[in-house]
Length: 486
Image 1 (tube, one colour):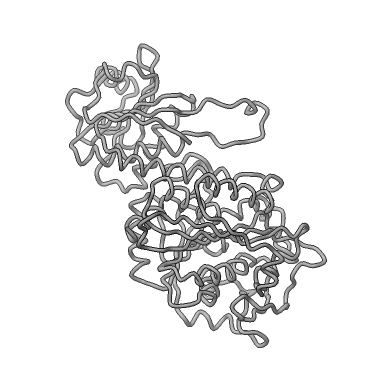
Image 2: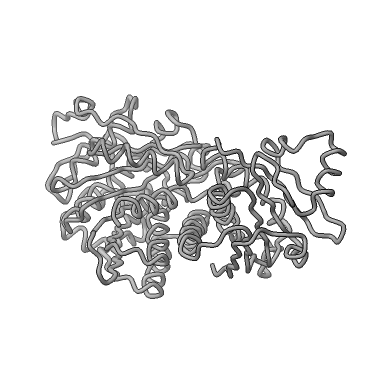
């Protein structure tokens, strides 16, 4: 993704906008003086029997006399970042649907308002600038993509650079997540990651199936052993910039397809399970964004890549397996595979002694029941960090909410034949039980946040992003790193 950015601190006028065929005008609640194309806007509002203030509820798009398509939207100061992103998405989408090569963003209002609106509008435009790939015949030829964005009314090279990096990370996450399962097997995924590592200068290490078995990573191996070929691996990437004073770890669940194992999913719930690797794609997206933004933080990225299949070697209910850290686990449900592969991956990550671990996973249906698909849940071992994370999510336009982590929930995971049960058959607060389970495999007292991605997919788009698979977590994770570790 390579977008040319042009910035002007000067407000836009009709002359400066006349060279563009697609423009979005982002307006404050109070109508500014000297608004370009003001007479045309008034005529359009009169025709539809609406007022200027109605643009705060519903943006409008219409053609100017010379054929330029213009979108008009009012952003009230009381709006949250998520609400601003949503309004801007609605205003910008009709423009991007025409697949322009250039887009102008004109912001108005006082300096503080222009700063926020320019950054938000640029993010919405940049994150949706590139169409996701598909296998349709008509998409065989490379479609026109947005090549340049010109921003009028605010200029800040560093801020826009970080936003573009964040958008690039989100795009990577979505492009990987939507790939069909036959086009993203563990083997293919590992090859793609190796290419990304070479391109970005990341250190690259793989713990393949044989090595993991030899190490005693029995939780991961239990899930991976049912697949043919046995091409699973835990992939370890490291971004280590000069002068980095902080060291954090990202961990991602990468189940390339989840049948549910012996507890086979019905068709309704197996559909879409090629996106069960979304957590690993989010971790990769954050790593990509951090690299492009040159964040001065050492980042270890651990990706648990496998499939959950059925077959003669697949793990079964009532099996007892031994994890990498020696904990024995009683298997209760083979569709609770995500916490199994993350268990050994978290152990490996914690042994590098990072100052913070954040994992991402499409982990539990109960989180979707709790929050729906418009926000995601976070659980962790540092209440003060979780409080900060909620605020960071709000500011990023990706809302997260804290779920319980109380110790007594763990009573439900007591086993008569092993150190711990993998889950329960009753369900209940499975998101909390999963977090209590995962915490058992982090060695040392390391601050940790677990992100259960109930909002990774939302029909019609979510916040800034127009596509159903939305890359949720990249903006939140990137901003958390910037605020807490720089």
